[in-house]
Image (cartoon, rainbow over the protein chains, first blue to last red):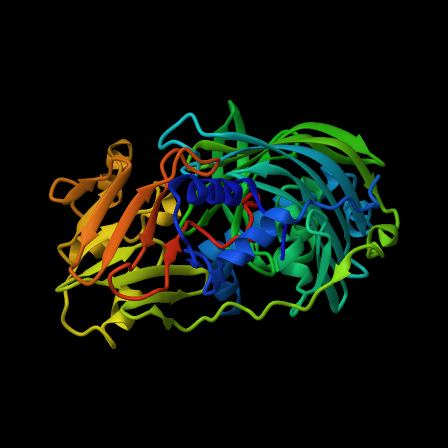
Length: 55
Length: 427
């Protein structure tokens, strides 16, 4: 599970604002049938900070 | 007879093209520090700043396109077939900070934002390093040196008020490049290739600086169909140093299994009764059966094949509506297919020109504009098309919402893309 992207956050905001009782989410670029819990979980994950080697 | 045959061969157009290409390549090798220096150019490390333009992929249709920034790091070592490419930036409503490492037969995808590392199922040095080679002039010259037997002289043309020889280069992967060498300096000024479905990709090499006896262009510009796509400013360049230090995997990344590859054959999933997700290879459309017709949501590539797959289970009901989620060029490819079905295309008024331009016949395209919401009520089922814009991806973004309050309990929304995908600069 990845941290939610800004565009995903916007989708979540719209779902909440419109009061949609969403259970299932499907997308235009993946065969994955996601649950609303997947969306909520991605919103709870923060981007991590990892030490990287480059000049 | 032998003499006559030799004369004919010498005069033949292909042989002339090969011989002239060799002359151009030899002159270029001399200009780039000499054949020996290029042959010994084994590793290059560059740190760069990219400005990218989201051509036909911006928040609003039409120019000016959204401008984004990326910090790029790349390291290549030919002898050890090692490549490290890292990009950190934003664009299209996505933040990305990731890296790809190819080390011989091994490879990994690193996601610094998500904190994970994924082994690559099929590491490919040539494929992965190709974009870096194509934007690095001395590495293109090195390719010409190694692959001169594939090269032909195409002719001479004026570019930037200077005469240039144009020769071809066929790399290990990808369409052939046409390389423009200045007839006086013998430096590479430009290269071109045709990359379907994007069109003409035009690379410009400028502001040369010599590093360890080899000239590298400090700045670089890439145009797609004459529109700016990527400008690169090279902050640092190192040559012939070990790249081993960049190939380590940070210990604090979580190793996750390689995701199964996207299916190449079209799959049809029945998400709910009469609701089908159909697609393959990263492009999917949703088809919703109403009382006596079908509403299609999504216009990515391959809609005719997806309709064909739908017809295996939904035989006769006509597709009366095709919903275009937004105006990006990879999401309006389905417009001609829906027009061919005599369907009405749903979009917002602001995207009308894009839809008509994508149609087989702009004038006869049937359009229905969505203002905030459009509701299909099919007796047993309701399908709402909702504009959730403005979003960081597109000003107007249509999603399909199936409350199915009259039919079943499953509730489905069709957004623009999967949650984990990200945009990367296209080179």
